[in-house]
Image (tube, rainbow, N blue to C red; front, side, top):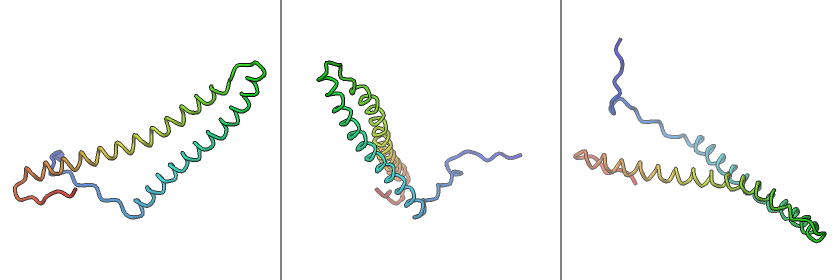
Length: 117
């Protein structure tokens, strides 16, 4: 039984995304970003209310307790924001690396057309 060889010539390029797939991906990313903004707004409103409640407790001689839920929830909010930032940065780096590789490969092939930027 013949096994296909795994050479660079046997790898076919992946098909481009269709306009519908691009639209669906863009809507998904926009929805996730909007969800984060809503999450951040609720975080601010709720923690402002907790701050007001805790300031009443401080006036009565108790320790401020509102910092603990604000820190825990803030950590979750930060991690979510970091996820968006990480994927945006990773996509930009991947595009830059891919374009550099295309230029390098085309430069090594005599008579090849220049790569698109």
